[in-house]
Image 1 (tube, rainbow, N blue to C red):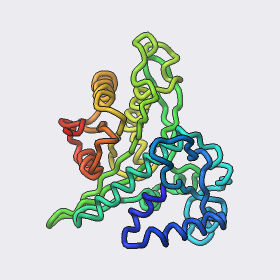
Image 2 (image 1 turned 90 degrees about the horizontal axis):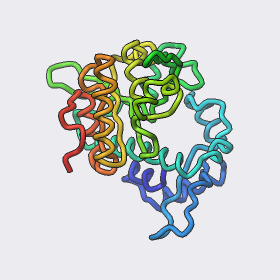
Image 3 (image 1 turned 60 degrees about the horizontal axis):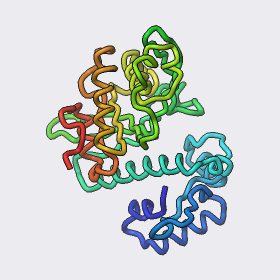
Image 4 (image 1 turned 180 degrees about the vertical axis):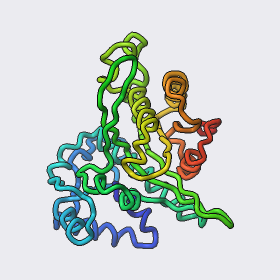
Length: 289
């Protein structure tokens, strides 16, 4: 995530002191600065530094905190980032920070982080190297294959209800940067090749199959979750919604509100969008502004 997003999380701390601390953590290999963040000739100047976990930081979190950081060489992993997938990762982190800050401003709702979800998951998921990934058997137009679902983020919302137990809702987040085909041509959809080619429609179908097979329960021991996709424009979000309605929901008899779509740049209050996803309201899929 970017340094200025970290400053927002610790708004009661001095940005100068936080900046010095980040620099010390970087020099001692607890944090890294992915090289793909370097901008040349950017109008308006460079942006704030991007920080990622480095190997010493990963070891510390794993040994002292028991965090599921995995066995990865984090410095080498950070070097594999391209500009495109770094921007995608930053967009996910920015949304999750916006969500956390929006929840802090309210007393009746709080974020359920993935670590808490994982703590209540089946043992097989806890022991997995990649606990946020699960295989789904997908059948579509006679074709059959296994596709691994990996949401960009998995979180929940805990909503307080007066005189009642807290309501918990779970969301799989997808950030779309506008680079993937939404729905291939009909001749492609009806071919065996469709399930082997990346598209937004294939991902929606995979989520639909995961819901039909109740895999969210098997993987995370959570009740039915919803899929919130944020993309680059209202027109693209509308096209996704139409594909979900006409090519997925009718074929799978999905519950209303399983899929929700919005525009990332217009999501000034991500909590409103997450709450809308939690309630399953699909009448207003695109933010009004």
